[in-house]
Image (cartoon, rainbow, N blue to C red):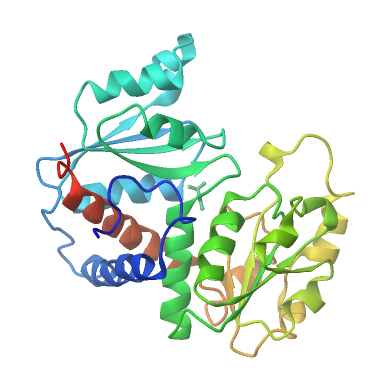
Length: 311
Ligand code: CP
C-alpha cells in the first residue's frame, strides 16, 4: 500500500509504519535543508495552493518553503483579500481553485472537519494544516521527528503535554500519534482545560504540574487558545503562570535530560518562562521549527508520488 495515498487529513488512521516512512524521508530532507543548495525537483511542474483561513507563521511559511524547495509552483491565497470577504463559501472557493487544476491544496480553517469536507469536493491532494480543535497532523509528525532525533527513539517515552488541552488540535494529534507508537502520555492542566471524554484516550490526567511532569522524558507546553474560548477558563494569567507555567525550577522534577517543546506561537511568562524557552540545553523549540520544513517536504513528496494513480 502507498504511503499517504490521497490526502493528509489527520494522524488518527495512520499506521506506525506509515509514520516511520514519513519521518525517515523527512530526516533526509532535514539533511538537504542544511546544505547550501536546498533544492530538489520532485514537484517540478506541479502547482501547490496554500489557503489559510486562520493566522499562521510557522505552518504557512514552512509549507511555502517546502513546496518551493521541491520545485513546485506555490501560490499563497490571500484569504483576507479574496471573495470570501464578499460572502463566497469555503466550498465555492475550493471549487473555483480546483478548476485551475492545482495538484496540492494546503488548508487551515477554524472549523473542525472543514478540511475533510473540502477534500471531498476537489480532484487534487489536500493537506490539513490545522482545522479547529480537530487535528494538526504535520505538527504531530514534526514533533515526533524532533523527539526521535533528540531521544534516539520514539517509543517507551514518558511524554507530558501541558496546558490548554481542550482547545488544542496539536494536543489531539500528538495524543493520537505518540500514543499509538507506545509512549506513556500524561496530560497536565486545570480541569477546565481538559476535554470531555478524555478518559477514552488512554492517557493519564494531572491537575498539578510538578506531579504531572515528574520523571518525564518530554515536556510539551501549549498556549492558552483564547481564540477558541468562550468566556474565562482560568482565573487570571498571573495565577495560571504561577500554577501551570513551566520554568527551570519546576522542570527539575522531570528527567535530568528531559526536553522542552512548544509548537508556537509561544506566550512567554504565561505557559513558559522566556529564559527556559531560549535555553538550548533543554529547549528544542527551534528544532521543531526546522523539522517542520523537512516533514512538510516529505508529506508533499509522498502525496505527489501518488497523484494521478487512480485518475
Ligand atoms: N504551530 C503552529 O501551527 O504555528 P502557526 O500557527 O504559526 O502556524
